[in-house]
Amino acid sequence: MAVADALVELDPATRITALGTARGLETRLVPERGYHLELITPVPLPRKANGDLARLPLRVRRAVRETRAILDRVEADVIVGFGGYVALPAYLAARGGARRRHPVPVVIHEANASAGLANRVGARAAHRVLSAVPDSGLRDAEVVGVPVRSAITSLDRAAMRAEARAHFGLAEDARVLLVFGGSQGAASINKAVAAAARPLAAAGISVLHAHGPKNRLDLPQPAADDPPYIAVPYLTRMELAYAAADLAICRSGAMTVAEVSAVGLPAVYVPLPIGNGEQRLNALPVVNAGGGLIVDDRDLTPEYVADTVAGLLTDTERLAAMTTAAALVGHRDAAQRVAQVALDVAIQARRSGRRG
Image: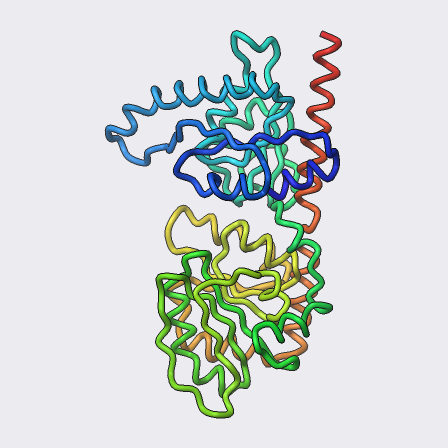
């Protein structure tokens, strides 16, 4: 959606059609942003040899046929793909069909540090390949960062700090730790930080903790003079949370790392302990630049929070250096860069088509 917004900003005549599936959040999010949504058959790639794997070729053919019909109907000039269930059918459909004389050019963006299968397949014939970080596994990829929404890229944390802290009931001169684990929260992060509530309070640290709508925190009864520990199910205004915070504890999904680094917020990244290790890889560029730390999920203990995290928040000089480093490694213009590439490819394809 950030790229769609940037495309319309660059060229208000741009027509956006989003591809999605009936079971995805896009059925609500895309129309809410004012963009047209077309639904196709999802093509999840089974990880085991089972019935789903046997049915995969039929699902792919059906999804490609549906996507090709949409491309013809909307007269698509370019496909911008980000991987996932709808990307592979789109990449295959772009190669052309009976009604389309020329293939639709493809621009691929890989958000993760290790490219997924759909983008690996699509990159073989793509016109331009973009990535969030170097060495994503896609050859000749141009590093542009991860597109994030304008409310994040335009955020001036220093200018918004007083307003943000007043919004959450935090003192203007407080030392603030922001804790979140994605939209559903992260149980291991919740448990470790909540168990360190007393030593954090003793160090004079305020906590803003989004624990997830299905989770609850086991917090001790605060003393009268303790700094606040604000626990909420979720945060609807993440930009205010970023502005209020001095340091974050969070997972290291591609979007989380992109947003946190784009606003220049140092973080303790706790990669999800499942998958193929891509969350650790996502955080490494920021950590290597000095803008954060990585701690394994099993090592994020109450003692680590009380010692290392509290020690960092009370080390003004080190925290300032990490803040500067995080801001330098972040990509605030990623959405605009992806949008400009897409427009350039579409214009070039139209010119080539007229010449043909």
